[in-house]
Length: 409
Length: 56
Image (cartoon, rainbow over all chains, first blue to last red):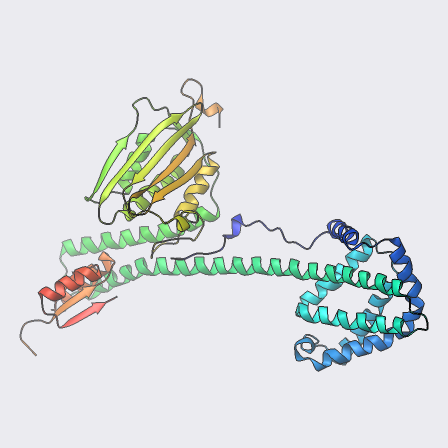
């Protein structure tokens, strides 16, 4: 059994770095949560002159400590010049900490700093630890004055916690984006693997047929014909693999026309014959109105469902296809087999792209089927009992026989 | 080596692959049986002696 994350075209990308408004809105919410107000800002501004002369020392200490820890040190690849630049940046950061108006621009700049730490690959725990060290240094300076202002220290602590929250946010956002990228690559890898596997088999058959035809000591006309037919079939199978892929990646908009269900089913059955040990039952009312649909695409839908039913009944069984109208404008078509059934945990996932309980195949069949049905304005549902069988229910819009069906499309 | 051609069993879940291998080997003068599943292969092995088995 294989599984994969969502395929490229269906995944929602919700984790672009937050825009400034959103970031500031969250910051304001956190300020209220922590109990930060303008009095806190005033107090922090008030202690700025006390701590400012110590910034250089605190920053030097900051980078000396980084130098002692390999995991933190390794992200600084630009040597002493980079460290000097980083030190100037940190001094500016401290300056802004104690003198800003903590507005939207402040939050945006802090977010950028957080983002930058993520980009250079610094593990978040080191960012947190480094901030703790800075905090400790600042508080030590304040505590060492003649009359340490306890309230100012509290305000400074609140401010640093808020800054920490912004950095955390940046890390989580980036983590989410990176995970989505990994999932996408995994999906691509899985598709590539599936395609390679699925194409190798037909190509191998073609190759061995050609080998036989070119080296056989005795080649009767019947054998020649047999092999040529075999080669042709394998080419068709290869083409099907490629079609499944492109169908899924870029499903064309359906061309809706009135379709007689039985005609479409019959053509599908011609292309997907059932083995002799599968009994076929048809349950269509005689006065069934036409469907509104794209014939080629519906044949894909019905073909997938019929083949899945057939595959589930390797030891024989019964496939029943039925249909009825659910007024005013829906036709319900059911595909019921008496096969092995689908486990509940699989049932939730079988319509996912690349998910398959079969050893062969890309696992796109049901994803394509559902996609086509939904683009027709319909629905696909599945229910199953292990050991008893499975029922797929397809709902599709009907063409109105009384009116002009094409007017609907 | 005996006079009768060697008996080969070819096992592959792809019927077409089995058919091709059968054609190639029979053209080379071997006697070939094919099976498309493990169960079918075991049944054949129990019924006949084989000199070589080709498995996928």
